[in-house]
Amino acid sequence: MHEVRTSRLLVAYDPRIPRHRSREFLVLSRQGGTVHLEMLRTGVPWEQGMLVGIGESVTADDLIAWMHAAGRSVRDPDALHADLEAYLTQLAPLAERNIVRLVPADGVPGFRLDLLAERPER
Image: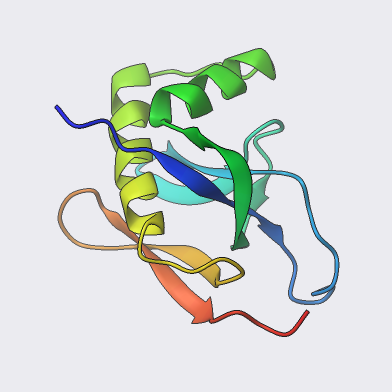
């Protein structure tokens, strides 16, 4: 099986403070059948993310390891791994500084990334 790799991830983005550059990576989470973005280290839900280069290539396994290192528990690692692989795959066609949100979608994986803005002004 092909391992999905990326050197770009979403960071928390607040449109009310567009010049603020967060260092908090976003991952996705499923709770009660609902999927949403959340901060990797804290698990705080977040609405929007900005795609940034991170200077290294990472996989779903790396993101899960980072979550563990931050003290986060993972209830179903296999399901999370599949979701993160789909998430990383959907990041691939996006450009750095694109603003996106995660929305529910029919079928597998049950979500999609919705482009809100292409490379907004700095």
